[in-house]
Image (cartoon, rainbow, N blue to C red; front, side):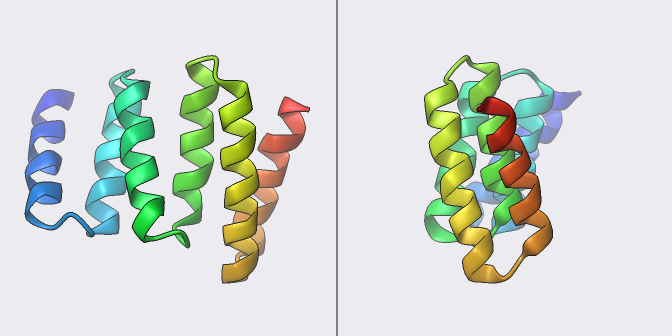
Length: 104
């Protein structure tokens, strides 16, 4: 069943590549399916054109952690913190800072 959702979301993203909600949904479906490499790619594409989508930064960092790429996760969390500060999203900033603090 996740593949069905993934295929639907891939078509949505192909039709509208800068649809933040569709791309985030696709990335999250990849996370659910355990395909963290694909998820990271989608999250990175999303924040490239919509850096204010703060939870994409958070979940990208989480996926990178699951891949054992903690240095990259730290960088993503830091970039997400900066994006959240620019947006004025204190809740997202707090979540990202917490994730960064856990990595040490």
